[in-house]
Image (cartoon, rainbow, N blue to C red):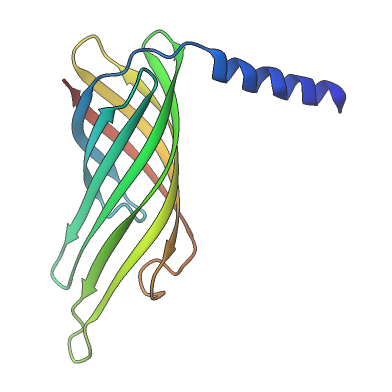
Length: 163
């Protein structure tokens, strides 16, 4: 047990002491996932330092009998893995709203808030392109119609232009 504890402390210490790769000042693109991300999201990242940034995502969906949007904001820490690969983790939250047209009945609408975590891996190409895959667990708080006030998992692939 003592060896396992020392190994865990060493790994965590290495992760936090490793030098972060410089991250782009700005990046904008698309985050493509589903679950509660509402499909495609427009995503924007703004560097706040050498190894941290703010990410803002706006997702929306519009169909024949429904529509909705979700706005998420996350604070992320970025660490270098090897070469042009980075990994990142973050915390944040957001707000959303949706509506269903119920033919022959009462229309259903709901506004909700949520808290989110984020962990992912990204590759920074030699051209101003950033490709990432992330996992975002979310817990929502609303009227129990859309998000069921439980834990949801959002997995997405993102492509961003860096400037």
